[in-house]
Amino acid sequence: MDVYDKLTILTDSAKYDVSCSSSGVERKSDIAGGIGNSVSSGICHSFAADGRCISLLKVLMSNSCIFDCKYCVNRRSNDTRRSMFTPEELADLTMNFYRRNYIEGLFLSSGIMRNPDYTTEQLISVLELLRHKHRFGGYIHVKAIPGADPALISRLGLLADRMSVNIELPSQDSLHQLAPDKTKEAILKPMSVIRHGIRENVTDLVKYRHAPKFVPGGQSTQLIVGATPDSDLKILTLTEALYKKYELKRVYYSAYTPVMEHSLLPALDSKPPLLREHRLYQADWLLRFYGFEAKELLDERAPNFNPFMDPKCNWAMNHIDRFPVDINTAPYEILLRVPGIGVRSAKRIVSARRSARLDYPGLKKLGVVLKRAQYFITCSGRRLEGLKVNESTILRSLLSKKEVSMFLPEPQVEQLSLFTDEELATGTGEDLVKCLG
Image 1 (cartoon, rainbow, N blue to C red):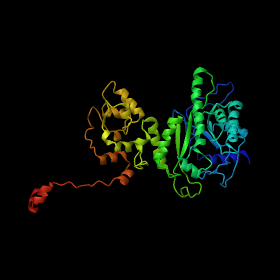
Image 2 (spheres, rainbow, N blue to C red):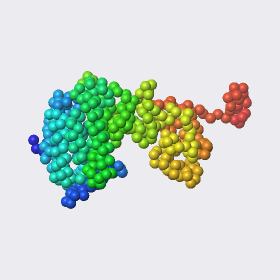
Image 3 (cartoon, helix red, strand yellow):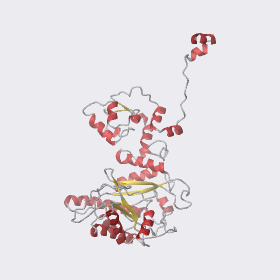
Image 4 (cartoon, rainbow, N blue to C red):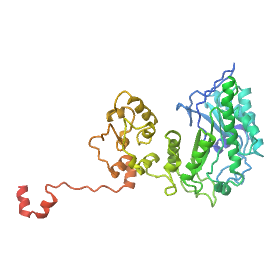
């Protein structure tokens, strides 16, 4: 099998992993004669910290795997074409793609060959060839293999910009049923090793200017949504714990795409739960930047997100008694909870009101989405002139036209009358004719 055939098989096998976003690491090629850096712009699916798109070669080292995860297209029992790159082939391929300006970096993962330690050693060989032989200074994201020796994980971390360990299933029961070869402990142990290595490296860099960097882009993980009966509350609670305990940079959510037939999995003709994935990403943003906690957004009575409304607006409608808030006096933390006010606009409000009292036209200039925010705020104690505030009006403002038609009944339209109900009840037909004449 030639390299092109291997590339076709192993890039297709890697497409279900979504945790490949770039992190904006500023690794430059400082070595004389070195090439590549991780700050150049690209054209593909991953993004730097400043929002620029960065292209990555997303590929598996091998799609052969000793595990038999029921949801995975590369599982041991699946009848599919298998292939494997040698470290030299993959390193040369990456450099050839880079020289042709097809990519800016590499996202490398693998099925588990023989055992976790052997697989990790193969990944290390690829990265050592790129970093030391080819002097490649571009962005590299590599997957840590659950069950691998901590010393190997540490070696891998000194060569990569970002690492990830995919949890995939949000509960121990789900792992036991669908991924019997995996355990929670085997998945979380590499996360602990990476977290510890990052903390130690921060101290080393303070003491020694030229200390080697360990995973400077941090670590991430992926959770599959919809493959199991686990609720949004279960997934979001796990996400919150991962951010706090393991200091992850990102948790990625992947709507389950049916690729395998199994009694415990959704039917092959079922659609991926893309809206549910979208709501989880919105809630994840609220956890990381808006100061929300998982228990505020969901509870046992409502364990799944409202499909018609984003989590922030849904929270505001469920806590309408906390509004309105005065835009000129409310703390920054409270402003972040107002629909229509984001992190940037909240910071602008806090800065601008130091020199002048804000009004509604001024808020619009600061980037506030008044269509949403107007129902939840006042300016110096005053509502927007002419604004009608009731639950139906607010909902119609927060929902799209399609969602309004599904969520709310059509308003009753009454024809205007020249007469009051009392006049119509007491007047005669002759009186009405005289009035109209």
